[in-house]
Structure formats: structure tokens, C-alpha cells
Image (cartoon, rainbow, N blue to C red; front, side, top):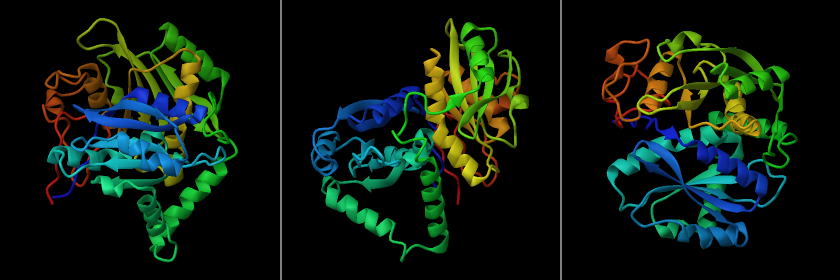
Amino acid sequence: LTMARANLNIQTQINEEFLRAQDSGDVRLLKVKIQDEDLILDGIVNKVGTPSDDFNTVLLDSIADDQALFVLFRASDDSQESSPWCMVAWVPDGCRVRDKMLYSSSREDLKRSLGLGFFKSEYAANQRSDLTWSQYQHSLDRNFDADVLTESERLVLEEKQQVQAESAVSKSSALSVLPFAMTSEVTDQLNAFKEGTCNWVEMTITNEIISLVGFRSVTADDSLQSFIDTENASFIALKLPKGEESGDISLFIFSCPENSPVRVKMTMSSSKASVLAAAQQLGITFDKTLEIRDADEVDEAVRSARFPRATDSPVPGGSSAAASSHGKPQRPGRAGTKTKVSKFKLDEA
């Protein structure tokens, strides 16, 4: 059997608090757990001592022996460090098999949501004796020794280092409140979004500037797939009526086609928190963030957000077959997408 992607929703609060943690510099770690089919924030712990001291003490105090957890740990207190974070995946031997599968398969999605460039490393542990600073440092030496990397691993590492170096100046404080400038067109349309005169605003990053791709008004009955650019990555602010409750739901969608260049994927992923911060400056917050890789995923993703418990309701603009209780069927050869599905599944080998 080959592990499929867990495809969990990522709570907007995680992105917001991660942004604040980088801006303040006072936070040592954020705890993220899986609840139902969502990744949610489980707690924030401030610095007590040095990174090494807190890894050996504060981190250990933050975990339970029978509960898996992601810990976003600030492994460097250097304010000029562009990648100060380590993602610690705590998956103890005593937790449920399903939890082990979910945490293993959602780790990369969480990092991408927050920005790959902010993480210098990741570290997996399944017993408390693994959670020492010396063990962690040993894993860095093992993982990043250029003499033992394969050629493809070396190229990936070099590209990541190059992207981090290029962005270090603009991110000298990790992430300020508004790291990227915003064009007047984006400001105008986000204000219109806030006031309710349009409910779809599409943006992208151009030379570290948030620029406008387009805007429109859509309805819950529209097939959103036709509005998605199949070639270029973008961010979309979307507001639609809630499926089962009064009021509206605001969604932040990161559309990143699989055929996008690696550099574009990394740049857009790393910019996501900045765009959210820019929207927040205008008084706009989002109820959920979604990520899609193909245009045909958007209607199912939005439906799942609007109808979190109604897995059998039809997809607006689509056929009822696409809204089965197991989520949208996967394409042959694909391991899954970032849209929410109602049940964790495995691909047959």
C-alpha cells in the first residue's frame, strides 16, 4: 500500500498565529493537532530559555504520550535567520494507527500552507528519548551533509537555499505586518469584497507586490471550475452563503496548478501568509483556507467548506456523483489533492 495525502482543511488561525509569532519573536512553539478532518491550533508557548534548553524542556512538557501532535518549534533566535522554524512531528507508538497515517500524510501540506521557506528542517519522533537537542542536531548533520546527498537531493537543497537568500532582505524580520506592497487595484477590490459589492477577488505575486488578476460576482449555483486559471498560480478571496446556517462564509483559496514551475510554487506558497496579513490590514479575515491543484477540484472544495457535515449534498454546478460520501474520486496515478475529503483513503499499490 502507498500512503495517500490526508487532504485536511487547515484552520486560518494557524496561519495568523504563525505570522504573529514570527513578527513578535517571543513565541517558542505552536502546537497543531488533527481534529476530525481539520488541522487546528492547539496552543502557543512562549520562550523560556535558549532554543536548546527549550527543546529539552518546554517541548517535552507540550506533548502527551498517547496523542500525536505537530510542533512548530523556533529553533533559532537570530532575528536575521530567514528559516528559523523546525516542524516536529510527534507520533508516539501508543497513538492510533489512523492518527499515525494522518499525521504522516499531512505534514507537507501544513508546511506548504505556512511557507516552506520558513522551515529549516523537520524532525520526527515517536518516543520521548528522541526529543533532545543533541538528537535533533544529529539529524541535521545526517540530512544535510552535502557529501552524502544524491545529486537530485543536492539540487533541491541548493534551490531552497537560493530562494531563501533572495527573499532574506524583504523578510529581514521574518514577516512584518505587511511584508508585500499592494497595488491600488487590489486594495479597491478587497474593500469591495469587504463591503459585499463583489465576492471573488483573484490575486498573484509579481516582484513581491500583490497584484490584481481579476474580480467578479459569482453565485452558489455557478460552476467555479470555469473561473480557475489552469496555468498560473493565484490567491482567491471568495464569499458565498453558508450551506446550512445564516450568513456568509469567507474562503481564501490558493490555486497552484501541478504544472507550475517549482520556483513559482515555492514563491506563492511562501507568500500566502503575507497576502493573508495584507487582507487582515484591511479588516478582512477568512473562515477557512483551501488549496487546490486542479481547476476541477474547486467546486468540491468549496462545497465541503460550505456544507461541512453534508457530504451527500450535490456539488453546485456539477453532478451528484462527484459528491459521494468518500469525496471526489481521485484520478489514476494521483495521490490526492489538498481539498477536504470525508474519509482518509489509501491508494492500492
